[in-house]
Image (cartoon, rainbow, N blue to C red):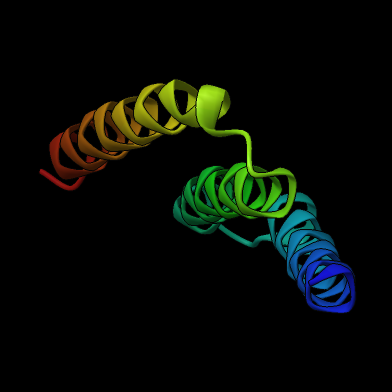
Amino acid sequence: MMPVYVVTLVLLGCAAALTLYRAARGPSMLDRAVALDTMTALAMCGVGAFAVATDDYADLPILLVLSLLGFVGSVSLARFFAGKSR
């Protein structure tokens, strides 16, 4: 199980690095918003992988909080950008 966890962490780390690059370099504010939403999803994947690797599911409420924050953040940014286009 441990090699699978290590490979998962490496892949999540690579995805996080690419997402941080997009957040820093993104030409528009919408690119940065999508990158931060992706970082929230990657954090959720990391918490889930940690819970599976350690067989301790006490941290799963963190997934609920992260999913709610991601949803509310995405909806509020979508409303903000929709208002700017008019």
